Length: 172
Ligand code: APR
Image 1 (cartoon, rainbow, N blue to C red):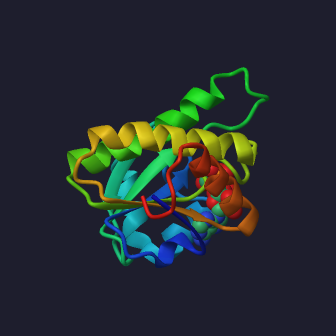
Image 2 (cartoon, rainbow, N blue to C red; image 1 turned 90 degrees about the vertical axis):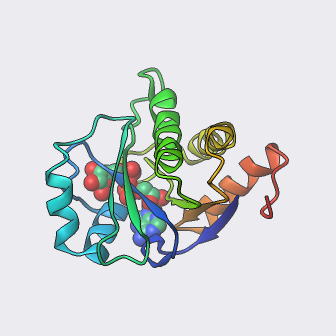
């Protein structure tokens, strides 16, 4: 597992995870960046998926992206923490890794799901992201590389702190 700071659309991995919304028809933030880089075919493929529930994830081709696939995960909007937000965020990471196992993918890159306009607290989200990923990796033997692609040094530091808590260095 590793943490990088940069634009997730530039990564050459088997699957990029998109922080999508339930319509799967695009938006701002990383959703907008991925759709812009992937081209209009991505939206057409997403349209055929008929949306996605919060906490769930669906997979498409990567279209014009370097990545082979996009895994569209729908994170929870933060409403103070007593509306199942932690479980729904964890479910995004577990569902995405489950799709990697199903499609026998070797590498995946995650943005900080729900950390933008969905206002999930960054430190809490990073802890959930790392803990859920470490656990879910046991069910995805083909997955050899997990990248947390953060968009700021602060976000990256939170993910590195969470990994340190698991005794997982960047080399793991
Ligand atoms: N690469 C990597 N990370 C990015 C990029 C990028 N190109 N652009 C933004 N981010 C980061 C943000 O800084 C934030 O840390 O992704 C994280 C998630 O932020 P959002 O994209 O706002 O996603 P989220 O908070 O999950 O809200 C999802 O926003 O764009 C809409 O359609 C989307 O309705 C959905 C909602």
